Image (cartoon, rainbow, N blue to C red; front, side):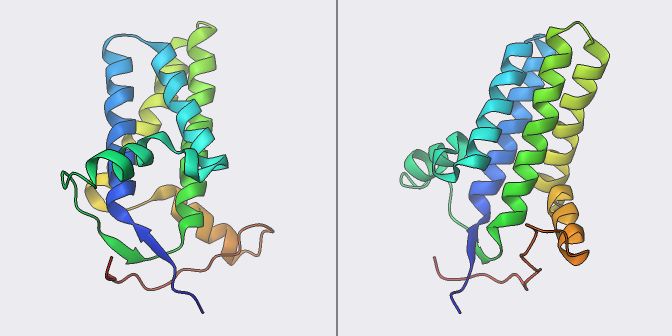
Length: 154
């Protein structure tokens, strides 16, 4: 069986980017920035090679040695699901903001900020947790099972 690997530094940079841009969107009242982050997340979910924040990490930050990889045995599917879920909440938040439902829009954006921060700072991925619960319940499409994470040469 092929060992599954995920560079967790790429995930952390992705989370930091999501948090930073959404905080800027909130502070400067920029619903378009919320929509942009949602689009980046949803496109990256559907087409992982097009994930903008991860591409910045892999093409700029990692090659220059500004960030070091932390490659672990892990399943990419739960992380992709979490990103899609976050992108969906942000998209709904952006729509709410554009339609004038400001408290709902910012609440959804803050939900994503808080959950991304929970993952970035404490290593708990709420979307991954949901994915694995759906997998445990046998929901079609949620086939990856938890594996023991360990550092791999990278």
